Image (cartoon, rainbow, N blue to C red; front, side, top):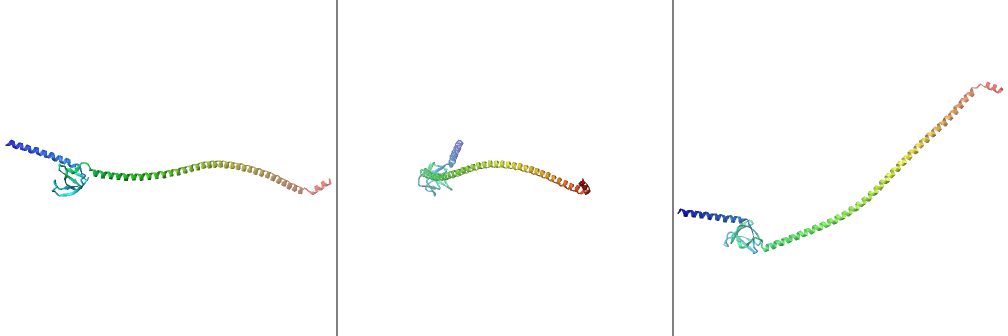
Amino acid sequence: MRHSKRAMGRALALVGLIAAAIAGSGIAMAQTTAYVTDALEITLRSGQGNDYRILRLLESGEQLEVLQRGETWTRVRAGNDEGWVRSVYLDAEPGAAARLEQAVSQRDSLRDENRDLSEQVAALESQVENLSSENERLREDNQRMTERLQEADEGLQLADENQALRKEVLDLERQVNDLSREANRAADQESRDWFIAGAGVIVFGMLLGILVTRIPWRRRSNWSEL
């Protein structure tokens, strides 16, 4: 009797371990993803059977989160709703209709992107044209600046030559002034000499006149008698 109880206990423990393993495998599968097949619509029910209440309709290609997978029914989450759907209506990949819709969406997206790229290319071509025009304008400005610099160099050369000529003129004017001063000094010296000579003549005449007036007339008469 005791042996039968022990055997039964071991059997129950083994069953518990198997159940735990099955539950663990169910939990491990709860994080997978499934998609509704190409059927038009399927029902999400509150339990495993057609007699359970319909929670909502699921569209073809709709993505579902698998919570517990079974051979006939699978528990899934669709948005905020959790329920059961027939496993036969679930696929690991999106259905053909969903893939077609995705391909069409990608095509439209690529068209939009291509249109945007075409507009960007047109804008870049316009910028290149504007930059080419600006480059041409800058080249012309550079040419004009080069010509002005050459003219400025010629002007500087003329300015240097003009400065040299001015220096020569100043030197000549200085020499002329020196000669003029020497001529003036010579003229002044000659004038002074003539003035002194004239003054000497006048003084001599005055002295002679004084001497003549002071000579006695008698002596003159005596001289006349002689």
